[in-house]
Length: 311
Image (tube, rainbow, N blue to C red; front, side, top):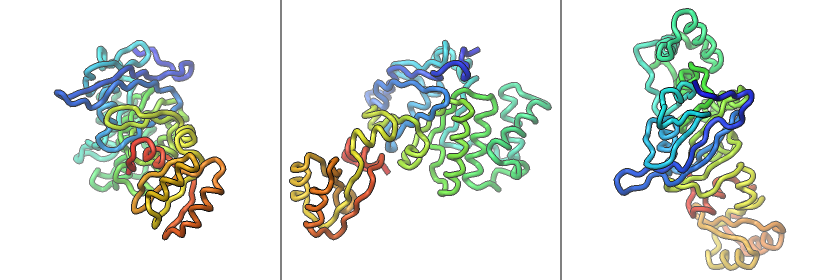
């Protein structure tokens, strides 16, 4: 058994120097981090950044070219079966059985963990309540909305009372209401003591849910910290979106006021310095077609670090 105890330990999982390449192509390069109990750790990056490959290495579905993953005293790569006994995994694919009802899907999956009979039915009832699917228990899979299917997949991942839960872009394709409902369930997992690793390319999701973030580009960690730390350190408090002023003028102003400017949509993005009024006055005087002042966010961080917007 794993030597993990969410009530006394702090570290749920350690990933050390994970790297993966296919042929000569590197997909993940030297990624290391820890995941703590009662924490949501986010892997934030665009499609192709290596997020899903990292998750695959964490639960043993993908063999790393170098590095290892450890839960307690157990290394995933050498004893994956033991490690996975305390993991819950929500991949991007639902893989639900369309021939079974909601209740039957969970009951059948419980058998994989040798939970049968009354114990299985009791556990399924608990999970349906936890993810708020009791009223849908007898429905077939094709009767469920996308959001309800995602909740069912999460319930399935919790059958074995996992200490660590991996969520690989779990809300992709969901409408805003369904995403909000799923977020509540993720926060519940954290409050119950789980370590949660979430991959996402949604800025609002990362900023709303994650205690810490790893920012990924081309398989590498380019920065990390809490959402607030990343925003404050990389951007500052406020930014300006501006259109209708030429880039040379804006770059000159950015240099003059010791800040930065990047192309952004059909215009440009400037970070306002700690004392913003002088630069703001210059921008107003330039008579732009559009001038918007707002608080900085994680999308601005990614743009500053990579020169690209994430979504």
